[in-house]
Amino acid sequence: MRWRALQTFARPAILATAPLLVAATIAIAGPPWISIEYPPNRLDKDTRGALALVRIYHHENAGQFPVEGTAEGIVDGQRVSLPLKFSAVGDEGVWAAWGKIPEEGNWVLAIHGTDGISKAEVSILAALAEGNQEISFVKVPRSREGNWPRAASDRDVESMLQTAVVMAEAQGRSPFNAITVGEAAMGLGGALLLLPFGLAAVRRRREGEVA
Image 1 (spheres, rainbow, N blue to C red):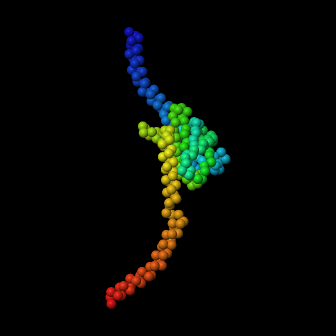
Image 2: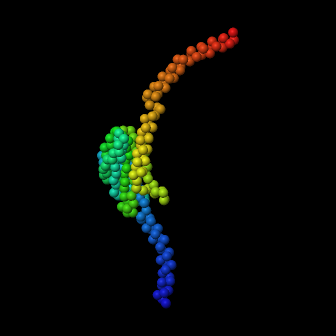
Image 3: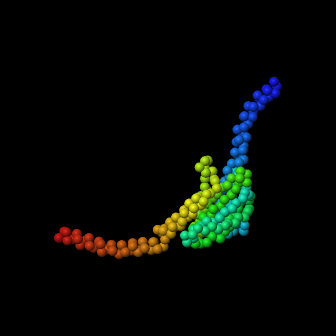
């Protein structure tokens, strides 16, 4: 009877602690976060010349988790992929991304990391501009469930690369470039030169109507 009583009392206790154990497991194995810092500090010898700095967090805590990545580009209509190098710098959890990106073509940095605790993979994509040495746009692929960062697919990379192409073309068609401004100034000057002749023609027509 005593053993059965203990079993009776123990069963509710086990059931009550089960949700706590599940919650603790989720908290420990939750998805990581990835972020990018640009531009790196040029006054720091460890980051001078780096493309960007990358951090991976497990919840709010940064960690020295593995990072890898490539530069994905389109040059003369051809897809090109170049490896990036990473070095740990400064505080724990900070990586400097290194690589020589050609000035030709359109490029995207595709950087991936793995949380050493939950083993979840995350990615961050950065489109380059201004001679492919500056970051103009950043995107972190998210999951549909929970809107958490996830690993980038090939489709994500290709979509980001097309975005880089469109942005570069838009910059090239800017209405405020020197040629367009010059043409606008010439057009305005021509209109000002023709204005007196137009006023004179209107005046003569009115005089003819009065006569």
